[in-house]
Image 1: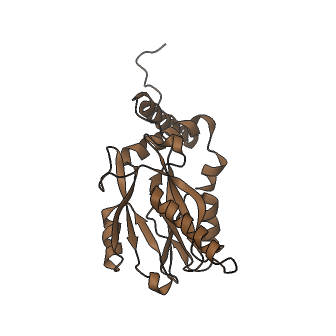
Image 2: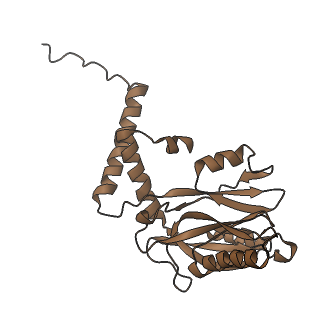
Image 3: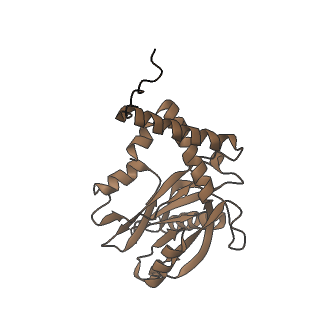
Length: 238
């Protein structure tokens, strides 16, 4: 062997090798997040829509429902705002005492409403029952419970604990016009934007996963996807 000969040039990585290397790096980052001992709670995105005709806001964590709205199933005028935030989809994902977020729909104002306040949720359910007893032959157009939208933590005196963030609620103040609608946002810029269109701020109504919690959930997803592949639901969300 001629030890003084010029060594062969290093060949550039193929596209396939680059992708494999990137996947390995992401998986390593996810493993690091796992081994840190922090919570591995699952989160999903709450997707916000705005209707340019109704001037109403709506949210969903269901990718199939979001896709249907995109295709016009809920009527014309709905567009995504990009103001999404992470939520816990089940009680077992919440690192604390989980509370269900009730989702209501009212056909009168054609609007949805969300609340994590048990008294508020129970009060709306009881209002429907009382109306139906008093008006057995009249259609109820008020708030009807559709189920649990997601899960959250309660705020204490308008404050949220460590590694969580507040969710703010705005109201369009149009009950007299039978046009009630609320907007739920998680950042101060969106709070200011909503206040600028004269929607009063009702305060902090619940607590959501903080940025680091959502990042850990993303790391867990990357590790699982790198190992087993994405689920059908995750593919539908792309």
